[in-house]
Length: 309
Ligand code: NAD
Image 1 (cartoon, rainbow, N blue to C red):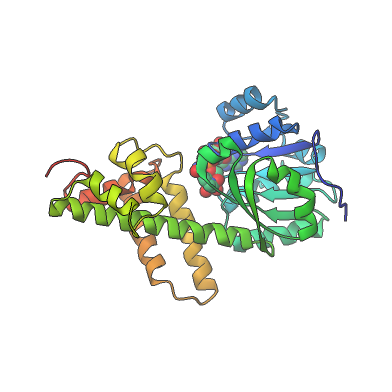
Image 2 (cartoon, rainbow, N blue to C red; image 1 turned 60 degrees about the vertical axis):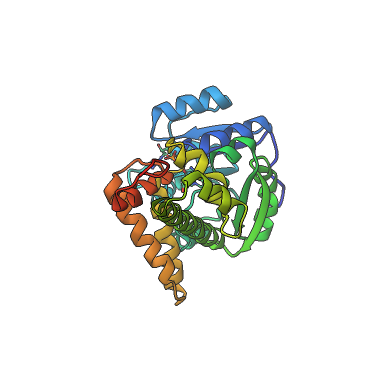
Protein backbone atom coordinates (compact mmCIF):
# COMPACT_ATOMS: atom_id res chain seq x y z
CA UNK A 1 0.00 0.00 0.00
CA UNK A 2 1.13 3.53 -0.76
CA UNK A 3 1.40 4.98 2.75
CA UNK A 4 2.55 8.50 1.82
CA UNK A 5 0.19 11.13 3.22
CA UNK A 6 -1.81 13.09 0.68
CA UNK A 7 -0.60 16.62 1.36
CA UNK A 8 -0.79 19.96 -0.49
CA UNK A 9 -0.38 20.69 -3.32
CA UNK A 10 -1.86 17.29 -4.27
CA UNK A 11 -4.78 17.47 -6.67
CA UNK A 12 -8.06 16.36 -5.07
CA UNK A 13 -11.32 15.66 -6.86
CA UNK A 14 -14.50 17.01 -5.28
CA UNK A 15 -17.75 15.68 -6.72
CA UNK A 16 -20.84 17.53 -5.45
CA UNK A 17 -20.37 21.25 -4.79
CA UNK A 18 -23.68 21.96 -3.07
CA UNK A 19 -24.36 23.57 0.30
CA UNK A 20 -21.72 21.40 2.00
CA UNK A 21 -19.34 20.44 -0.82
CA UNK A 22 -18.58 24.05 -1.80
CA UNK A 23 -17.35 25.28 1.62
CA UNK A 24 -15.46 22.01 2.12
CA UNK A 25 -13.70 22.45 -1.23
CA UNK A 26 -12.93 26.06 -0.32
CA UNK A 27 -11.16 24.91 2.85
CA UNK A 28 -9.17 22.31 0.91
CA UNK A 29 -8.07 25.04 -1.50
CA UNK A 30 -7.15 27.33 1.42
CA UNK A 31 -4.97 24.52 2.78
CA UNK A 32 -3.12 24.45 -0.55
CA UNK A 33 -4.74 21.50 -2.34
CA UNK A 34 -5.52 21.84 -6.04
CA UNK A 35 -9.18 21.06 -6.71
CA UNK A 36 -10.76 19.27 -9.67
CA UNK A 37 -14.52 19.72 -9.42
CA UNK A 38 -17.60 18.08 -10.88
CA UNK A 39 -21.33 18.67 -10.36
CA UNK A 40 -24.44 18.16 -12.48
CA UNK A 41 -25.39 21.75 -11.68
CA UNK A 42 -23.41 24.22 -13.84
CA UNK A 43 -24.12 27.07 -11.42
CA UNK A 44 -22.62 25.08 -8.54
CA UNK A 45 -19.55 24.35 -10.67
CA UNK A 46 -19.10 27.99 -11.63
CA UNK A 47 -19.29 28.99 -7.94
CA UNK A 48 -16.69 26.32 -7.10
CA UNK A 49 -14.36 27.57 -9.83
CA UNK A 50 -14.66 31.14 -8.56
CA UNK A 51 -14.21 30.20 -4.90
CA UNK A 52 -11.42 27.64 -5.19
CA UNK A 53 -9.75 28.10 -8.56
CA UNK A 54 -10.90 24.54 -9.31
CA UNK A 55 -10.24 22.87 -12.62
CA UNK A 56 -13.49 21.74 -14.21
CA UNK A 57 -12.59 19.11 -16.79
CA UNK A 58 -16.20 18.08 -17.39
CA UNK A 59 -15.31 14.39 -17.20
CA UNK A 60 -15.35 12.10 -14.16
CA UNK A 61 -12.82 9.79 -15.87
CA UNK A 62 -10.35 12.67 -16.25
CA UNK A 63 -10.81 13.65 -12.60
CA UNK A 64 -10.18 10.02 -11.59
CA UNK A 65 -7.00 9.91 -13.69
CA UNK A 66 -5.57 13.14 -12.33
CA UNK A 67 -6.31 12.78 -8.60
CA UNK A 68 -4.80 10.64 -5.86
CA UNK A 69 -7.93 11.18 -3.77
CA UNK A 70 -11.49 11.96 -4.81
CA UNK A 71 -14.11 13.21 -2.36
CA UNK A 72 -17.83 12.72 -3.00
CA UNK A 73 -20.33 15.07 -1.27
CA UNK A 74 -23.55 13.99 -2.94
CA UNK A 75 -27.17 13.63 -1.79
CA UNK A 76 -27.01 9.86 -1.16
CA UNK A 77 -25.26 6.56 -1.82
CA UNK A 78 -27.17 6.07 -5.07
CA UNK A 79 -25.66 9.25 -6.52
CA UNK A 80 -22.21 8.18 -5.27
CA UNK A 81 -22.55 4.80 -6.99
CA UNK A 82 -23.64 6.58 -10.17
CA UNK A 83 -20.55 8.81 -10.32
CA UNK A 84 -18.16 6.00 -9.34
CA UNK A 85 -19.48 3.18 -11.51
CA UNK A 86 -21.56 5.23 -13.98
CA UNK A 87 -24.30 4.09 -16.26
CA UNK A 88 -23.51 6.30 -19.22
CA UNK A 89 -19.80 5.45 -19.62
CA UNK A 90 -18.11 8.45 -17.98
CA UNK A 91 -17.33 7.50 -14.39
CA UNK A 92 -14.57 7.81 -11.79
CA UNK A 93 -13.68 4.12 -11.88
CA UNK A 94 -12.72 4.42 -15.55
CA UNK A 95 -9.93 6.79 -14.52
CA UNK A 96 -8.94 6.04 -10.92
CA UNK A 97 -5.43 4.59 -10.64
CA UNK A 98 -4.47 1.68 -8.37
CA UNK A 99 -3.65 3.01 -4.90
CA UNK A 100 -5.88 6.04 -5.28
CA UNK A 101 -8.62 6.53 -2.71
CA UNK A 102 -12.29 7.46 -2.83
CA UNK A 103 -13.56 9.27 0.27
CA UNK A 104 -17.35 9.34 0.43
CA UNK A 105 -18.25 12.22 2.77
CA UNK A 106 -21.95 12.14 1.83
CA UNK A 107 -24.43 10.59 4.26
CA UNK A 108 -24.85 7.32 2.36
CA UNK A 109 -26.30 3.94 3.22
CA UNK A 110 -23.63 1.76 4.90
CA UNK A 111 -24.80 -1.34 3.04
CA UNK A 112 -24.30 0.26 -0.38
CA UNK A 113 -20.97 1.67 0.85
CA UNK A 114 -19.65 -1.80 1.61
CA UNK A 115 -20.75 -3.06 -1.80
CA UNK A 116 -19.09 -0.13 -3.53
CA UNK A 117 -15.90 -0.57 -1.47
CA UNK A 118 -15.69 -4.20 -2.62
CA UNK A 119 -16.06 -3.16 -6.27
CA UNK A 120 -13.28 -0.58 -5.88
CA UNK A 121 -11.00 -3.00 -4.02
CA UNK A 122 -11.15 -5.38 -7.04
CA UNK A 123 -9.42 -2.57 -8.98
CA UNK A 124 -6.90 -1.74 -6.24
CA UNK A 125 -8.70 1.48 -5.29
CA UNK A 126 -9.25 2.14 -1.57
CA UNK A 127 -12.43 3.57 -0.10
CA UNK A 128 -13.18 5.42 3.12
CA UNK A 129 -16.57 6.59 4.36
CA UNK A 130 -16.19 9.92 6.13
CA UNK A 131 -19.58 11.57 6.67
CA UNK A 132 -19.75 14.82 8.57
CA UNK A 133 -21.82 16.59 11.19
CA UNK A 134 -22.05 20.30 11.89
CA UNK A 135 -23.93 21.69 8.91
CA UNK A 136 -23.04 24.52 6.58
CA UNK A 137 -21.69 26.78 9.35
CA UNK A 138 -19.11 24.25 10.51
CA UNK A 139 -18.35 23.29 6.90
CA UNK A 140 -17.48 26.95 6.29
CA UNK A 141 -15.36 27.19 9.48
CA UNK A 142 -13.56 23.86 8.83
CA UNK A 143 -14.81 22.66 12.23
CA UNK A 144 -16.89 19.69 11.07
CA UNK A 145 -17.02 16.47 13.07
CA UNK A 146 -15.92 13.70 10.73
CA UNK A 147 -16.63 10.01 11.41
CA UNK A 148 -14.36 7.81 9.36
CA UNK A 149 -14.67 4.12 8.54
CA UNK A 150 -12.16 2.01 6.64
CA UNK A 151 -8.58 0.82 6.72
CA UNK A 152 -6.57 2.67 9.38
CA UNK A 153 -3.53 3.01 7.07
CA UNK A 154 -5.70 4.70 4.43
CA UNK A 155 -7.20 6.96 7.08
CA UNK A 156 -3.70 8.01 8.18
CA UNK A 157 -2.83 8.73 4.56
CA UNK A 158 -5.93 10.93 4.16
CA UNK A 159 -5.76 12.61 7.59
CA UNK A 160 -4.25 15.90 6.29
CA UNK A 161 -7.18 16.22 3.89
CA UNK A 162 -9.74 15.53 6.60
CA UNK A 163 -8.03 17.95 8.97
CA UNK A 164 -8.37 20.70 6.37
CA UNK A 165 -12.17 20.35 6.66
CA UNK A 166 -12.88 19.19 10.19
CA UNK A 167 -11.94 19.67 13.80
CA UNK A 168 -12.81 16.33 15.37
CA UNK A 169 -11.99 13.18 13.47
CA UNK A 170 -13.44 9.96 14.90
CA UNK A 171 -12.35 6.53 13.71
CA UNK A 172 -15.45 4.33 13.72
CA UNK A 173 -14.13 0.96 12.47
CA UNK A 174 -14.70 -0.97 9.26
CA UNK A 175 -15.83 0.60 5.99
CA UNK A 176 -19.51 1.61 6.34
CA UNK A 177 -19.33 2.24 10.08
CA UNK A 178 -19.00 6.00 9.58
CA UNK A 179 -22.16 5.99 7.46
CA UNK A 180 -24.00 3.88 10.05
CA UNK A 181 -22.89 6.29 12.80
CA UNK A 182 -23.99 9.33 10.80
CA UNK A 183 -27.49 7.92 10.18
CA UNK A 184 -27.87 7.00 13.86
CA UNK A 185 -26.75 10.49 14.87
CA UNK A 186 -29.30 12.09 12.57
CA UNK A 187 -32.05 9.84 13.96
CA UNK A 188 -31.27 11.11 17.47
CA UNK A 189 -31.16 14.68 16.13
CA UNK A 190 -34.50 14.31 14.28
CA UNK A 191 -36.13 12.71 17.33
CA UNK A 192 -34.91 15.60 19.51
CA UNK A 193 -36.32 18.19 17.13
CA UNK A 194 -39.67 16.37 16.91
CA UNK A 195 -39.92 15.91 20.69
CA UNK A 196 -39.21 19.59 21.26
CA UNK A 197 -41.74 20.63 18.55
CA UNK A 198 -44.45 18.61 20.27
CA UNK A 199 -43.53 20.02 23.69
CA UNK A 200 -43.37 23.67 22.57
CA UNK A 201 -46.69 23.31 20.74
CA UNK A 202 -48.44 21.66 23.70
CA UNK A 203 -46.92 24.24 26.07
CA UNK A 204 -48.15 27.12 23.93
CA UNK A 205 -51.65 25.63 23.66
CA UNK A 206 -51.61 25.31 27.47
CA UNK A 207 -50.93 29.04 27.76
CA UNK A 208 -47.13 29.24 27.96
CA UNK A 209 -45.15 31.48 25.62
CA UNK A 210 -43.29 29.48 22.95
CA UNK A 211 -40.03 31.41 23.35
CA UNK A 212 -40.23 30.99 27.11
CA UNK A 213 -40.68 27.22 26.71
CA UNK A 214 -37.53 27.08 24.55
CA UNK A 215 -35.52 29.21 27.01
CA UNK A 216 -36.59 27.03 29.96
CA UNK A 217 -35.80 23.80 28.07
CA UNK A 218 -32.38 25.28 27.29
CA UNK A 219 -31.73 25.87 30.98
CA UNK A 220 -33.14 22.47 31.97
CA UNK A 221 -32.68 18.76 31.30
CA UNK A 222 -34.93 18.84 28.20
CA UNK A 223 -32.33 20.85 26.28
CA UNK A 224 -30.97 19.35 23.05
CA UNK A 225 -29.16 20.55 19.93
CA UNK A 226 -32.43 21.60 18.28
CA UNK A 227 -33.69 23.59 21.27
CA UNK A 228 -30.27 25.26 21.55
CA UNK A 229 -29.40 25.88 17.92
CA UNK A 230 -32.59 25.66 15.86
CA UNK A 231 -35.75 26.82 17.66
CA UNK A 232 -35.03 30.52 18.12
CA UNK A 233 -32.77 30.75 15.06
CA UNK A 234 -34.81 29.01 12.35
CA UNK A 235 -38.23 28.01 13.76
CA UNK A 236 -39.66 30.75 15.99
CA UNK A 237 -38.02 33.31 13.67
CA UNK A 238 -39.93 31.59 10.80
CA UNK A 239 -36.69 31.71 8.72
CA UNK A 240 -36.63 27.94 8.08
CA UNK A 241 -33.24 28.26 6.37
CA UNK A 242 -30.78 26.09 8.31
CA UNK A 243 -29.23 24.76 5.08
CA UNK A 244 -30.13 21.08 5.66
CA UNK A 245 -33.14 19.84 3.75
CA UNK A 246 -36.05 17.80 5.04
CA UNK A 247 -35.60 15.38 2.13
CA UNK A 248 -32.04 14.60 3.27
CA UNK A 249 -33.19 14.12 6.86
CA UNK A 250 -35.87 11.63 5.80
CA UNK A 251 -33.22 9.77 3.79
CA UNK A 252 -31.00 9.60 6.90
CA UNK A 253 -33.92 8.36 9.04
CA UNK A 254 -34.61 5.60 6.52
CA UNK A 255 -30.94 4.61 6.72
CA UNK A 256 -31.02 4.56 10.54
CA UNK A 257 -34.08 2.29 10.52
CA UNK A 258 -32.35 0.05 7.93
CA UNK A 259 -29.32 -0.22 10.24
CA UNK A 260 -31.57 -1.17 13.17
CA UNK A 261 -33.44 -3.76 11.10
CA UNK A 262 -30.26 -5.20 9.57
CA UNK A 263 -28.87 -5.77 13.06
CA UNK A 264 -32.13 -7.08 14.57
CA UNK A 265 -32.24 -4.13 17.01
CA UNK A 266 -35.60 -2.97 18.37
CA UNK A 267 -36.33 0.55 17.12
CA UNK A 268 -39.97 1.53 17.75
CA UNK A 269 -39.07 5.22 18.35
CA UNK A 270 -36.97 5.37 15.18
CA UNK A 271 -39.79 3.78 13.17
CA UNK A 272 -42.35 6.25 14.58
CA UNK A 273 -39.94 9.12 13.93
CA UNK A 274 -39.43 8.05 10.31
CA UNK A 275 -43.19 7.78 9.81
CA UNK A 276 -43.83 11.28 11.22
CA UNK A 277 -41.03 12.92 9.22
CA UNK A 278 -42.13 11.10 6.04
CA UNK A 279 -45.69 12.37 6.53
CA UNK A 280 -44.29 15.88 7.03
CA UNK A 281 -42.27 15.52 3.81
CA UNK A 282 -45.39 14.43 1.89
CA UNK A 283 -47.37 17.30 3.36
CA UNK A 284 -44.75 20.04 2.81
CA UNK A 285 -43.51 18.89 -0.61
CA UNK A 286 -39.93 18.67 -1.90
CA UNK A 287 -37.24 21.24 -1.15
CA UNK A 288 -38.31 22.30 2.36
CA UNK A 289 -35.68 22.95 5.02
CA UNK A 290 -35.68 20.28 7.73
CA UNK A 291 -36.58 22.87 10.41
CA UNK A 292 -39.86 23.46 8.52
CA UNK A 293 -40.96 20.03 9.78
CA UNK A 294 -42.68 21.87 12.67
CA UNK A 295 -45.14 23.28 10.14
CA UNK A 296 -46.53 19.76 9.86
CA UNK A 297 -47.17 19.62 13.63
CA UNK A 298 -48.61 23.13 13.48
CA UNK A 299 -50.95 22.03 10.71
CA UNK A 300 -52.15 19.03 12.74
CA UNK A 301 -52.71 21.28 15.76
CA UNK A 302 -54.16 24.26 13.88
CA UNK A 303 -51.74 26.46 15.87
CA UNK A 304 -48.70 28.42 14.72
CA UNK A 305 -45.76 28.45 17.12
CA UNK A 306 -45.04 31.87 18.56
CA UNK A 307 -48.50 33.26 17.69
CA UNK A 308 -51.08 34.07 20.33
CA UNK A 309 -53.97 31.53 20.19
P1 NAD B 1 -26.94 19.74 -1.83
O1 NAD B 1 -28.19 19.25 -2.47
O2 NAD B 1 -26.83 21.18 -1.47
O3 NAD B 1 -25.66 19.36 -2.75
C1 NAD B 1 -25.56 18.18 -3.48
C2 NAD B 1 -24.87 18.50 -4.79
O4 NAD B 1 -24.67 17.27 -5.51
C3 NAD B 1 -25.69 19.43 -5.69
O5 NAD B 1 -24.89 20.52 -6.12
C4 NAD B 1 -26.09 18.52 -6.87
O6 NAD B 1 -26.18 19.21 -8.10
C5 NAD B 1 -24.96 17.52 -6.89
N1 NAD B 1 -25.30 16.23 -7.49
C6 NAD B 1 -26.38 15.45 -7.25
N2 NAD B 1 -26.33 14.32 -7.95
C7 NAD B 1 -25.17 14.39 -8.68
C8 NAD B 1 -24.54 13.51 -9.60
N3 NAD B 1 -25.08 12.32 -9.93
N4 NAD B 1 -23.37 13.91 -10.16
C9 NAD B 1 -22.80 15.11 -9.83
N5 NAD B 1 -23.35 15.97 -8.96
C10 NAD B 1 -24.52 15.61 -8.40
O7 NAD B 1 -26.74 18.80 -0.53
P2 NAD B 1 -25.85 19.12 0.77
O8 NAD B 1 -26.73 19.77 1.78
O9 NAD B 1 -24.57 19.73 0.35
O10 NAD B 1 -25.61 17.62 1.28
C11 NAD B 1 -24.63 16.76 0.68
C12 NAD B 1 -24.48 15.53 1.57
O11 NAD B 1 -24.06 15.94 2.87
C13 NAD B 1 -25.79 14.76 1.78
O12 NAD B 1 -25.52 13.38 1.80
C14 NAD B 1 -26.28 15.25 3.13
O13 NAD B 1 -27.13 14.30 3.77
C15 NAD B 1 -24.97 15.47 3.85
N6 NAD B 1 -24.97 16.46 4.94
C16 NAD B 1 -25.57 17.68 4.76
C17 NAD B 1 -25.53 18.61 5.82
C18 NAD B 1 -26.18 19.97 5.69
O14 NAD B 1 -26.29 20.66 6.72
N7 NAD B 1 -26.59 20.41 4.51
C19 NAD B 1 -24.88 18.29 7.01
C20 NAD B 1 -24.24 17.05 7.13
C21 NAD B 1 -24.28 16.14 6.09
